Amino acid sequence: MFPFEYIHLGGDEVDKQAWKNCGRCQQLIKKEGLKDEKELQSYFIKKMAAYINSKGKRAIGWDEVMEGGLAENTVVMSWRGMEGGIHAANMGHDVIMAPNSYAYFDLYQGDPELEPDAYSRLLLSQVYRFDPAPQEVGADKRHHVLGGHGCLWTEHIQTGPQAEYMLFPRLLALSETIWTPKERLSWEHFLGRMEHHLARLEAAGINYAKSAYQANINIVRDTTADGLKAVIKNELGRHAIRYTLDGSPPDERSPLYKGPVVLENKTVIKAATFRNGKRFGQVSSVEYYLNKATGKKVRYINTYSPQYAAGGDSGLANGLWGTKDFLDGRWQGFQEKNLEIVIDLGKPQAISSIRTHFLHNPASWIYLPRRVEFAVSEDGAHFTTVASFGAANQDANGIKAYEKQFPSQKARFVKIVGENIGRRPGRPEEKAWVFIDEVIVE
Image (cartoon, rainbow, N blue to C red):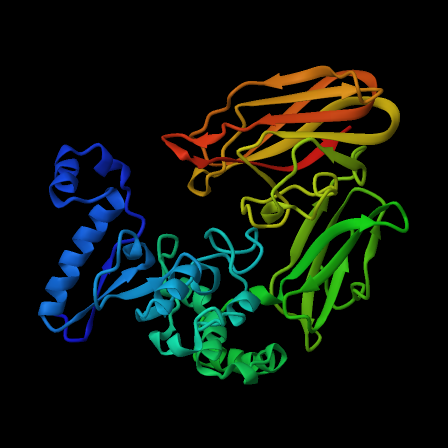
């Protein structure tokens, strides 16, 4: 059944909490003089690796098999980034690099609103930056990096054509980064070859993604006009982009994008890449919500994580809602800390409603706040609470809107508080996140 040299043991994402509550597991830990559950897993992996070796084979395990000590002659497959593989190679162990940050093809490769159901994100350009033997691996240890490896997990993939869509053209980028000497790698040259290969894929009837051609619409602060502007580009940095501001899909007669577009009204922006004069790929769309908070200054009592910054201090007042993908660049994340922001509307004015969204994605440690509060003030020092929301249902994934309409009153400052649950339910050692996308004041 297994004619080749290697047998993969797995060993990743083991829930050791069950072992802590298992009498037999704890008895074995004591009997074998093991320190903890990590060493218990190592004990089992080493036992299985020795058995595999006795049959003339070599064991492969995901990088978790290093925890508690690595079994002799076992190859480490590094998936949680590059660190595990770098460490193993420098210790003299053979390694296969398969990091989720560069080589997981089940991740979104473009705008989640335009893509098949997936999670997280891995762009074509990120794949091309993959270096299976980074400089952190000592020159005398490079031979321990056996190669790179792409992964396509199929929880969300139902058909062959969908698998092809997730693989191509990212597989082309991965192949080049593994097989081409570093000094000869060139993103621009690769793109020319890739477009040649797309024609070959079409001729072969292979379904491939045009995600890298998607026109990405970003709303940023216009410092010269004290407003906002739309910056549009695709991942490739080539081909023409055309756009509309009336919600209609762009065609060959639509305005050609030549630079940032100043936004003055609430609108739906649509854009697409045009190749050889014809639209190539999907139409991107962003609904821009012009409101009293748009473009205004936001003060943070607790700072957001730089990992999830949503464009910085203007990210919650740029008129854009986030999508279901928390990596879409529109969500601000606060780990363990409470969210507390104050928006300065510039002058006292009549307001009667406040709305915002929070994200719930427990698989990524993101939870709805324990409590949400809206408050308003004329002077920025004395606030009046206009809405208070208790604990929400933590079972349903997705985006939850918090909205309150109230009798019109004058205010210059709007405060939003989102109380973080602090730690993951059932996992007190792990910090929870709160994610917020935008504040609409009308």
